[in-house]
Image (cartoon, rainbow, N blue to C red; front, side, top):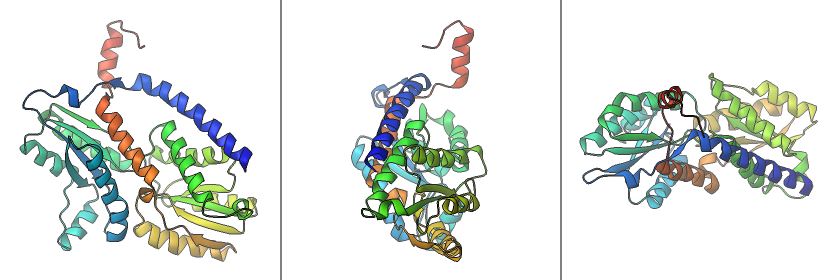
Length: 317
C-alpha cells in the first residue's frame, strides 16, 4: 500500500503542474474587490441545488455557507437554490428559498454592482448551464458578474477529490481488510458530456494503484452494470457504497442505501453504506472556498474578446 500511496502522490503532483499551466492561459488576473469604485458594492451569492432533508442540509449546505461568510467578511452574503421542486416543497413547510435569478434581481434592487457566484454543484452539468443562463439574462444590470466553477472542473480538481476520498475511505478500514474491501463511489450522473468526469475520477483512482475503488452513476456513465462487471472481475466479496454527491438526500437514502444495496446483495456481496456525503468533508468544503478565492482574483476572458485580439495580431502568451 505504501507504493500505491507514493504512486498516487506523484501522479497528482504531475496533474497539478499540468493544470496550473493550463489555467495560466485560461484565466487572467483581475482583483474584483480592488476594482470597486466609490459607490459600488460587491456580494457573494452561493448557489445550491438544494435539499428537503434538514439533517444533511445542516451538515453540508449550511456548513459551506457558514465557511464562506467567515472567509469573505467583506462581501455581502446571499443564498439561492436551483431546484424548483425543492423550493416548492420547502415553501409548503414555510421555508423560503430564492432562485438564482430572483436573488440576482434582489441584489440589483439593493444597489449591488459586482457579484461573485459560487455553485456547490459537483459537475459542470445541466444545473450549471441553467445558472449561467440566469446570469446572462441579468448581466447588463451589473458592472460585473463572475461565476465560479463547480467542484469538479479542472484536472487538478479531479485529482484533489480522488486523493481526498482515497485517504478518507482507506482510514475507515484496518490493515488487511483495506485491500479486500471494494469502495463504490455513486454519483448522480447526467445525460450531457459532463458525465465523463466520473470516468476520469475512476481512472485516476486506478492509475494511483487503487484498483479496489470504482465509480458508478445513477443517471449517467459509468452505470451500475459496468461497476458490477468490475466487482465480479476483481472477485470482490465486500463492498462499501459511498455517496459521491454533495448531500445525502433522496438518492443517497433511497437509491444507494436502498435499491443499489439490495441489488448488490442479491449478487452475493456483503454490502455496507458509508453515511458521509461529499459536502460533509472539510477538505471538500475548503475546495469550494478556494474556488471563490480564485474567482475573486481572476476572470475568464470572453472568447470573442480573445478572437478579436488574435485577429488584431496579438498572440497568446
